[in-house]
Each structure stands twice: as structure tokens, then as C-alpha cells.
Length: 111
Image (cartoon, rainbow, N blue to C red; front, side):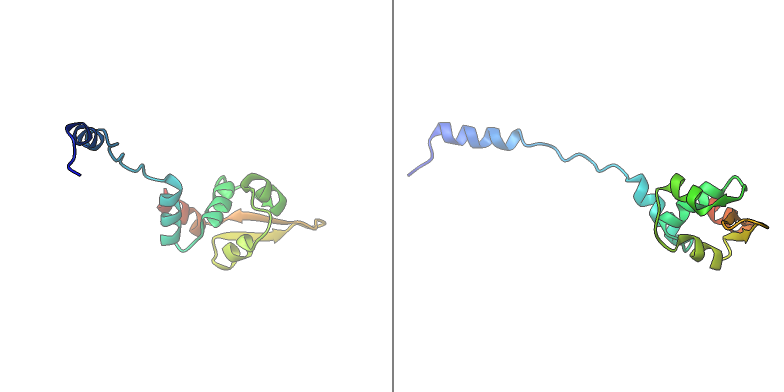
């Protein structure tokens, strides 16, 4: 059956009202993850370094509270990489963690 003028007009109208593709926005977390990976650390390890960037010593529970990371091996991995220092104060049970100069350099390279 041949197409009528009405059906041809409707088809043409549908083609012209199609939505235009919107350009994708850059995902800042994806970019941050990529930069962290280039420095040899994960995004969560980056978060730990961010908490320690002021140079003050902090305990693991304080770091966990500020980063939202409660489980994992982030602190030992950063310690082994030389990006943070860990020490126990006299008479204390908790370890105190502090960023090293190498850790500061990694943060600077990511930003």
C-alpha cells in the first residue's frame, strides 16, 4: 500500500524533532582517580593523604572518620611506600600517622 501524504509528513516531522546529543561533562572523580593512579596510589589512598596534608599527626580512627574509609590496608600501604610515617607515643596504644615529604610531593602532583 503506497504511503499517503499524511504518513510521509509525520515521518519527516519525527526526524526533525529528534533530540540533539548533549556533550558529556568531564567526571571530576574519574580525572582524580586517573591522576592518583599515575602517581601509583588509589583514590582512597589519596583521600588519606588529603586528611594528613596539614602535617599534623592523626590516629587511624580520625582518618577513618574524615575519609569514610573504615576497612582496608590504606595506611600500611602508604607507610610501606614511604608516603606516611607511623609512630606510637609513649604510654599510648594508638599509632599516630603523619604525611612525609614524599607524600606531599604525590599530593602536589595530583592537583
